[in-house]
Image 1 (cartoon, rainbow, N blue to C red):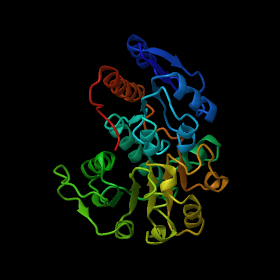
Image 2: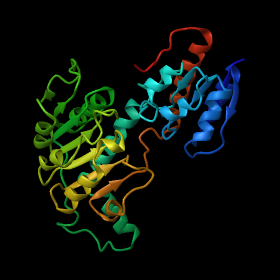
Image 3: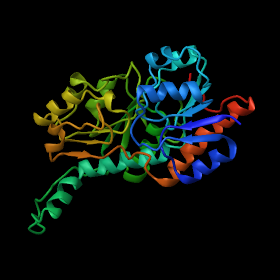
Length: 320
């Protein structure tokens, strides 16, 4: 029986399914794996299920030139914490869990859009602090989202799911920029604009939904933020380093944009004090997929890839 290593505790349904198919070792910490732990896992297990923060970079593989492991079945759609080329050179395939996370992540994007536009975080803090003095006509006036323009940066599965919710649920017009043009039969009215800056200039709310890669690092920089209008809001549910956090803080502090909603951070779990101190910023603790059934689906998809390797079948979700 092949040996399977889980880098974090996963939902019980996933662990039980894994134990039915493999000799399973479950690491009991919820912190990212350390370098020594990653090297030991490569030496002693056939398949590893890592996740966000488990930094399988080139140095880890260089330290284990002949690993026992043959697969990193990543728990999550984003895999920027894995050096895929170095893994492949060491003889490991890498898979991820696309599709399982789409709707849940899109839901959180809408949550952040509403919270930042309607100042919900600020209002909730006011009530909890005992500072609410009652309703009046000019209190906490925010941005009415219905009928506004949504700008989507990255029109993959998640970007499309966000756009559908915004268009059909709130009557929003959709403009977008994506590196890979594709037909959008469910969104015939969505308009592709020729550049990132054009999208950011046209939108009342911009949602970032691109995968993390060297090409998207700091894609949303000071120049991109400078194109946004003063009443506009930025939402990031992608990866933290897609947005230049220092540039975002500067834009917010200067009033160049109205607000931001963030579920991810450039150096998470560290969140800058400057962001935490601003009332016009909604901060969530990376909960884009935090629903039991979604995490179960992610785990079962990772196991499907593990079972495919065990059975000698093509890997369903191998990353390029």
